[in-house]
Structures are given as structure tokens and as C-alpha cells.
Image 1 (cartoon, rainbow, N blue to C red):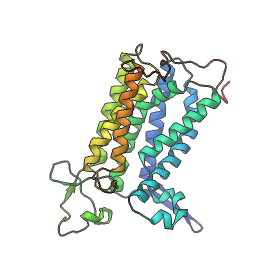
Image 2 (tube, rainbow, N blue to C red; image 1 turned 120 degrees about the horizontal axis):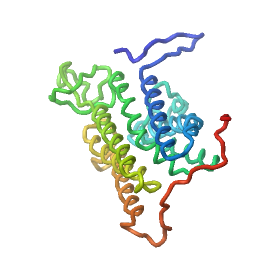
Image 3 (cartoon, rainbow, N blue to C red; image 1 turned 180 degrees about the vertical axis):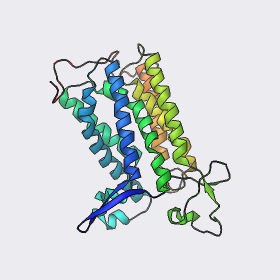
Image 4 (cartoon, rainbow, N blue to C red; image 1 turned 135 degrees about the horizontal axis):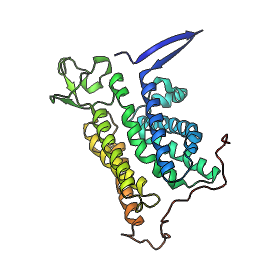
Length: 294
């Protein structure tokens, strides 16, 4: 399947609509819509989400690109060091989920500070939707023939064209056309649907027991565990020198540990003396109308 839906030229510049962009935008809009439902359920104005969406997208794209470039450099790739202008060549491809989360989170924090909103209310509301939105965008990886794993004989293995294979699998004698590979993007998609749905269910089922920050902490645990497992089938990820541990897997492990510790703090399993007691309730904005809304 051609990754490009259609393209056209204006002068010497080619513009193309790609399936990747369509799926990613679909995931973003679906995530935003789900978040508005959670925001409204908590008594906040859901229009805030649509107003901040551009902030989140811009922050997410910048963060995703910078993390991808940093990950490539740490893996020994000197392309971006030798061609620094290519860092901003996003249409070339190369975004990373971790960077998108960090960039989007920074944008959300700045926005909620400016608008005097409860940052935890919005972070907790968006966390499950991020998992589901990411899952909805993952079919684009199948079309692009990327984010696959090692060779497999399992019935759900997928074929990868020679042009899209990692160097370690480019020998067509050792790995002929009939070779199938682990669809790691599909594993992550399945994990995200299950965990995103689980978080949404838990938020509704135990709504009176959910403390500000608890849903995000649970997201850290679930997203971290999922990525730690899935990295088992990702030979394309650069590893820390002298180890078999990839940078992405290390971050995933730290995410899961941080989320678990955070949950224990929120529910007073541990009580650090240097930290004040956690809040029990969200704060709903009053007197700060959504820009552009009458």
C-alpha cells in the first residue's frame, strides 16, 4: 500500500498527503473528544480542550522530533550532527512517542498555568485518551512498514519489503521474501486499547476514590510496563553502550517505577516528610471563560 494518498507540486515544492498524517490526526481528534467527555464528567468546561489542542499538537510534534533526533545520535547516527537543518525536516519522518508526551505535557502545563486551571484535572483526563489515540494511529506504521520486530514463524507475522528492512535483515539469502516479522506496532496498539479502556473504566468505577494525579501515575505504570515488554521485539532501538538495555526501555522502566511510587504516595502507603499531603479533590475553574466562547 502506497504511504502517499496523493501529491501535487507548486513550483519546485512537492506537497503530499500521507496515510501516516491522516491516522495521526485521527488519533489526536479521537483522543481530544474522549478527553472532553472526561472533563465534562468532572464538572469542567470541555471547550478548554479544543482551545488548548493546538498548543498540545505543536508541543507534541516538537518534543517527538527532538527525542527522535537525540535517540538517533545516542545510537551513533551522525546524520543530524552533520546535517543540522534536517532536524526540522519533519516530513522526512522520525517522531518518538516519549518526546511527544513530554512536549505535549509541557504545553499543557504552560496553558493551564496561564488560564489558571487545575493541571491535574486535565492531565488525568487526557491520560487514558492518549493510549487510545496512539492505538488508533498505529495502523500507519503497517502502511509505512516500520516499527516491526524480529523474524517470526507465528501466524500473525508480517512481510517487510527489502527497501524497508533493517540492515541486520537486509540479506535476502538469509531472510528471503517469505520471512515474516513481529508486528510490534500491533502489540503496542493492542496493549494501549486494553490499558486505555481499563483506565477509563477505573476512573468511572472508583470516581470518588480517584485523587488528583492518580490516573496519570497509573498511566506511567501501564505505559511503562507495556513499552518495557514490547522493547523485547525491537532490534531497531539503540542500546546503552556496554549493555543490552535500550534507552527507550530504560525510560519505560523508570516510568513504571515512578508511577508506582507516586501512587503509593497519593494513597499514603509511603509518607515522605519533605512532601506535603496530596490533594483530595480537583479544582474546577470559576470566572475564567474559555477564550472565544460567549
